[in-house]
Image (cartoon, rainbow, N blue to C red; front, side, top):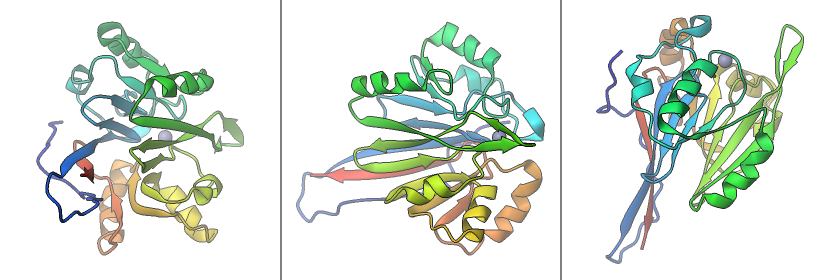
Length: 235
Ligand SMILES: [Zn+2]
């Protein structure tokens, strides 16, 4: 699959408008890689979430081998859990061997604290969330990434909207369709300016496009390679 950097599903322009000159713009770019895979960068720090996974695992989105080659050196890799549509030990090992980088997830979540001390512009907070499949609870974390006051929430595979319901003033939330439905059913409000619906199965893309067609702030992530930008303007 070829990546297109041209189109943008939605651009978030969260600006502090100023009538004075000398304004300087800063931005964070978020690229949708497939499933819950995202690449976030402010040009200095490179963060991958739920990527690399195993291409095509469980019938979900595939990605080209070149995606692995384009991963930036010394990146931060964050995983919600270890299922193969989110995480590939083999792919990650190869990437880290070639380019360095550090992995954070269920097996070393406490190390996030140390990481936060080294990050100047980002803060990454983990929330233990439920991921139950056929009665079995899998260890799973959702994340809140804060960048210059902008709050980006990544829910991963959790089905339980309780945690996200408690988080206020989210600028951009990434949630799967089932969490969107569960929140509606349980009357739990998601306090997010924009919602990206990720982890769509290829067969769910068309129905999701139809469903979200007239929704203003809720956007299905249907195309890999799409970029979302959050802009910050400072004087
Ligand atoms: Zn999944």
